[in-house]
Image 1 (tube, helix red, strand yellow):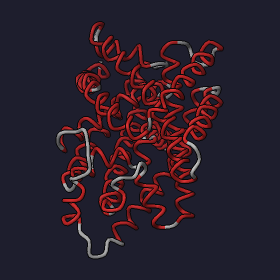
Image 2 (cartoon, rainbow, N blue to C red; image 1 turned 45 degrees about the vertical axis):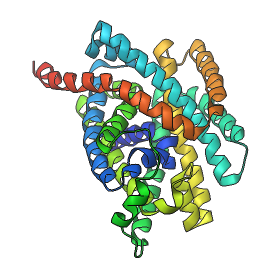
Image 3 (cartoon, rainbow, N blue to C red; image 1 turned 60 degrees about the vertical axis):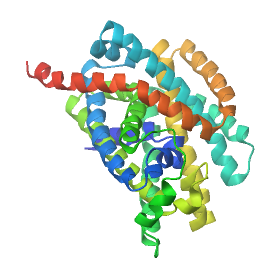
Image 4 (spheres, rainbow, N blue to C red; image 1 turned 120 degrees about the vertical axis):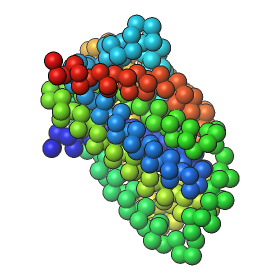
Length: 352
């Protein structure tokens, strides 16, 4: 059970980065569709639990040390190239978005120039990358519980203090929020697809580090289920305050500032920690795809990609989330389809 919870927590930590923890992803993917966003969150929860279980189970069975071997095994030679390229693009792109999010976080809460928070994130990620994979998983998982507690607390408070306002009345306000997604169903599927593309590489590596396939599978399931519940709670919190946070770069942080500036400061550090989680996962997995982890070449390669990511962060966090994320979500459907297909073949193989 301890290993299951550790892996589940780490799975959440990989995916919950700047976009989710800040509320910007939830605002664009779910809250912009108002009441239908609740249905979308439920659909996403079911898919995350199933695909999370499939990823960690595959990683354990194949003793994966990078996503490359698994992806080509489940997708075939030609589709494998496509999926591999999508994951590579996702790892690098999301890593850059995390660096941008780190800058926006400290800028919104403390008024620091965005490049300060971004540069600090680059340094922290590189220092963490010097650790081995078990220590990286431990670092990622240790921060996640603080976010879970914060999201639950904020959501309960927001719903309990809505007063005379109702979700039905706020629906017309929420649906005015601009989004690049066409409807709630495609948005829910796109969100899962995008995040699976984000988390697949590191989830496979985590599963590869767990010898017990059943433990790995349950870890992924618990992580996916927990992630879905956090999506629903975050959506309800932002929905309940949509009339005041619709234009914020980091809606959850804006909500915390309304509750208490002291709590908002605490939340800013938690958000920074979750951004750090995903950034570490992205750059570690990106580097491991090309060069064996732990080698001098690996460390040098990651350092160079961090510097490039820092440069890309100047495009701005909100813009990157709005345009880059949905694009990756559509491309990630190739990976989701491959995972669903292989999941039906796994039991037959295991029974022989």
